[in-house]
Image 1 (cartoon, one colour):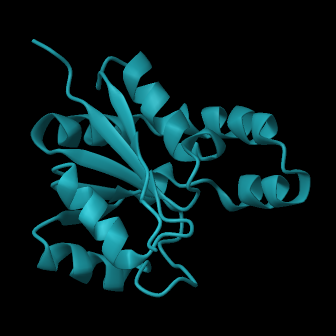
Image 2 (cartoon, rainbow, N blue to C red; image 1 turned 180 degrees about the horizontal axis):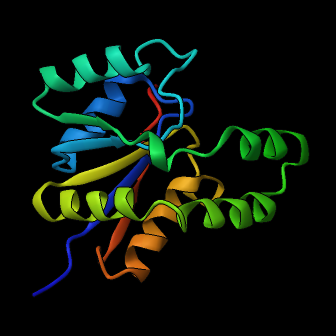
Length: 152
């Protein structure tokens, strides 16, 4: 039996319609919001508005707050811009989130799941660290990172 795959996506600089179309094109059935606070200054990307837009397209939405970056780590990263520092702190946080990781692994086995956060580049976002941890735990196999094409 093969392990389920997992996708990730960031909405930085993304037009909402192009974002939703990207999810549809890749067969996403569940968007898992990994932001600690599911709010955004970007229109359409806060929890309620995003959940409604996804529902219109037949895509489920789940906010897994436990997998968000703790406020103290976000603050340190904003000041230092040192992703290695964020990575160390976030790995320590993930070590305490076994239930949320197990839940996410079970969801990935049933759905075409995609992790959401802000940063366009997954290498600069905690969602890639979540995906790596799920792989190490043997809960998911291949991980794909989606990129929203720019609108002309």
